[in-house]
Image (cartoon, rainbow, N blue to C red):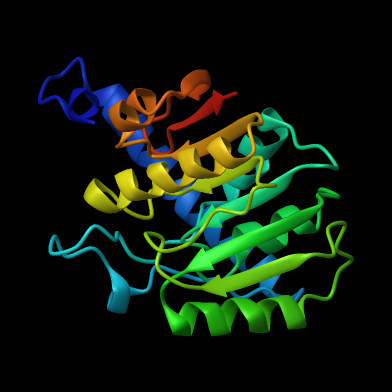
Length: 221
């Protein structure tokens, strides 16, 4: 980010451009949030009661940006036999949005905050448009204790945790793959733990560099 805010006359046009883009995306998020609220999906965030304070590995609830959802998932490509696992599923934005557009076998959201789980389940009940994936499940639990189902083929992470927790989740993924070898993709928005996931045997298959919303897709198997 620093290079976009360099204190120089030459840097002024780019700096203004970045600020304008940021402002427009804020407006865009609010418009989409209001649009989807009309269809029963209320996932507004962030929730400052559960934000990262530096004392734990968990980052807190911030919903995936609507712009990312509309560009990332078509680029990734999902098939009817895919099973999606989202860590830090929050109030259900990603799970319900994906279920409304892709006929996946099933979608699992794992969340360690009970209030968020209740909100996600309410959003699923209140959703007033067709679901192409009928099997959507929100599960309460700690990521470090969750046993990865052996049919999961896609994992989504919006930087829900870092550090030891992230490495323990990677260990659970590898254990599932050992039980049932199969291709597995990890979609990682804000890939701060890139080195760790590569060390675990995943390779980069696609990467999107962005000032605001960088993401990387990894694969194994």
